[in-house]
Length: 109
Figure 1 (cartoon, rainbow, N blue to C red):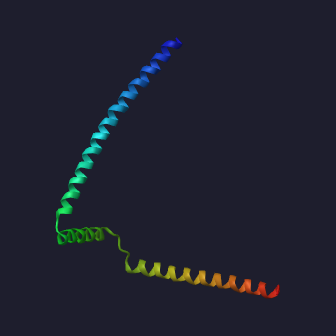
Figure 2 (spheres, rainbow, N blue to C red; figure 1 turned 60 degrees about the vertical axis):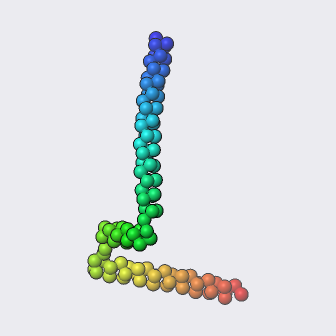
Figure 3 (cartoon, one colour; figure 1 turned 90 degrees about the horizontal axis):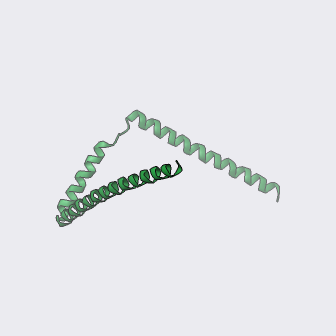
């Protein structure tokens, strides 16, 4: 019984190992194809003139800028007020700490 179970598990692991190796080979082939495509696209862009590459860059920037969620005026005011309030709070906090340490220092002199 024990030998039969050992054989079954060994056979099971062999099958899994073979499937893993097949998938790994497929993945390597896919990766090699992707690398070839990337290399060919790099070669194409490097051969283009500076002006053409600049126009392509600007086109990419414009398309990405269109995807951005720009805040509304109301949201912008809300964020600005929150930022200014946070700055005021932090400056008052550190000013208070500075005064406290100055008082402590004057007491122990």
